[in-house]
Length: 219
Length: 292
Image (cartoon, rainbow over all chains, first blue to last red; front, side, top):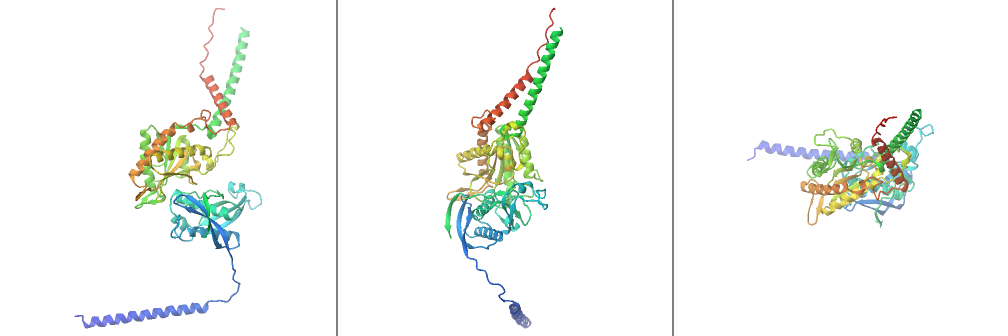
């Protein structure tokens, strides 16, 4: 037999819970109304419609260590470094799909892509000692790919896996940006020795054709 | 008497001039050998093992939280024992007691001082299948260096370029031996340190799980699998020790050298032999004074 005071306490607590839930719901509704009321939806600039275009991605496969050029229809911005950024972000996103042949954990991978014309010169205009000798000698355009540290830290560790990722990025740049001849990698804006313990990130890579399998069509 | 003294003086002067000339040529030859990979002296019985990672840098994580650094060290220990019993001298860049591991540059420095017949960089991974063999992705130089020019500086990041062909030969030898041991092996090139900094035939070996049809893959942590790989590598390195690829360029029938290089090396070696002859020839006995 449950004592009377316990039954009274139970109903009082149940009532309090119900009351608190109602207060919480009301609070949420009020907040949402407040945010909606202050949102400025004035159309100040016309929306830009970017048509889809065919790009080529150099996709890696862990099963046979291959790099294959595949075509994709995606919308890209017109500015060149933004295009490169969007393209590489799309490339890495392909690897986070469920049945990817080169699985990489999903999440933002590429922070920025900067395009630099080589050779670099000092501020005085003459070739000086402000930059490393290599960048004063190389010619053409260089892409500096700034990766997120979270991406590199969670990348599968191993020579094959890391090398395929690097080759995939290089192959994609080669297929879509013929004017880019070199690429360097940074991680959160700083130099880092390896991608995740193996592939060298301190060197300047030549942007070359890294594919070793016949190309595939649009998907 | 005065006539004999004059002849002796002239003879001594010409001999010293010849000795100075020969010494200069010998030094030039030594300079060529020290700086040109084609003339790099190689210790046929020395192998450098580089178990990758170490200390706080564990590398990949395999199986039940086993660090790659421990796998590479275990394989290196087994390989060291196997090679030692087969007459090799083995230099390892890391051992079990090393708490502060060397950087890849320091490891390359150790290897480059040994003039090893082979430099083996050991890795392990949880992905892929079989044994992956990687060589440097540097290209062999298009133009062979002018050996007659004397000192030829070699950039640190391109130190391996003179050994690209030998490294490829070594990788093929290792791959063949692994294949004979029924261990699938794949060959490739990879941008990993310190391959590009090594002045020796260098191959990075990455142990991946061993896939078997209809059964679970054997992980790289498996001791039996590691021993099979070690046995195959030992067989390959024994054959590599006597490989023509390790012979001096002038003696090798397929060294891939230009005729100009071959001539330069032959001339340098001929000069060296002449110098050795001059140095080792016994001092002529003093003329016996006969009755005048």
